[in-house]
Length: 166
Image (tube, rainbow, N blue to C red):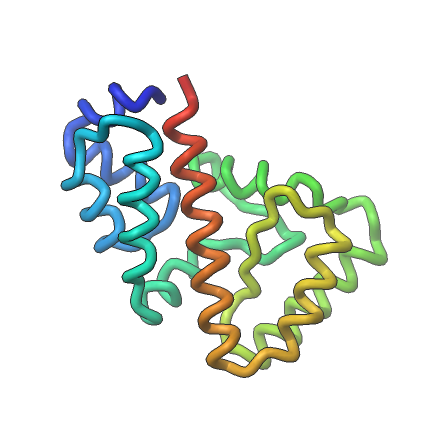
């Protein structure tokens, strides 16, 4: 979608579109109210600043929308399409990698009480597994911060992609 079209969307449609990037109401509202944007960079700057204000409970709520790494997203909506593309490099045909990710996800969820979140775009399955194993050594506070940062990266990539689809 062009920036011009995004700027002209009715508020409810813009909110729905942004929800596919991340389901955090305050972030969505901040981006929608800041329209019209003069450039994609201006839109991304507003989105980034709004993402820096996320509260831990908002991040936790948004995590509920993300599939486990290696499992892929279900559904047909924009959010599912984003997730499927982002995880495309995780080779589901590699049984050893799939099992290591499954076990790692399980350990992570037991330890931190949430799904393991990582910006999968641009990473292969082995690098994701290494990050998962590294992050299992984080404290709860370190992991809270790292998860929020990963969610911000995912959100920004998705928003940028939305604004670049003509």
